[in-house]
Image (cartoon, rainbow, N blue to C red; front, top):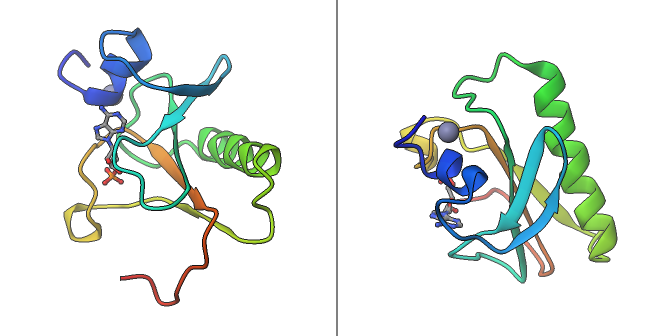
Length: 108
Ligand code: AMP
Ligand code: ZN
């Protein structure tokens, strides 16, 4: 989708600090980090809905691997914001990997 922010990052039209890439996914630093680690793992194809179970699994496995590489396995979150009330602002499937600091429960 030409007007989708994450599609434009995947195509290289908008710069991002990439941390990982494979055939299906791209991971890059969030522009407005909420923790020492705040990485977005996005699908390379534009998927707005959550019907693709294999793809969702892949994105989480990539997030877990980045968590391992960064040594934050003692506590991190993988978050899917879904819908405007959750704060979702980009409607292209992505997993937030957030960690590197203590976190409260429940989230806000
Ligand atoms: P969500 O609110 O779940 O849709 O997540 C969208 C995320 O994209 C937010 O955490 C934003 O800070 C992040 N974001 C917006 N623009 C950019 C950008 N140009 N590069 C990296 N992250 C971005
Ligand atoms: Zn997109």
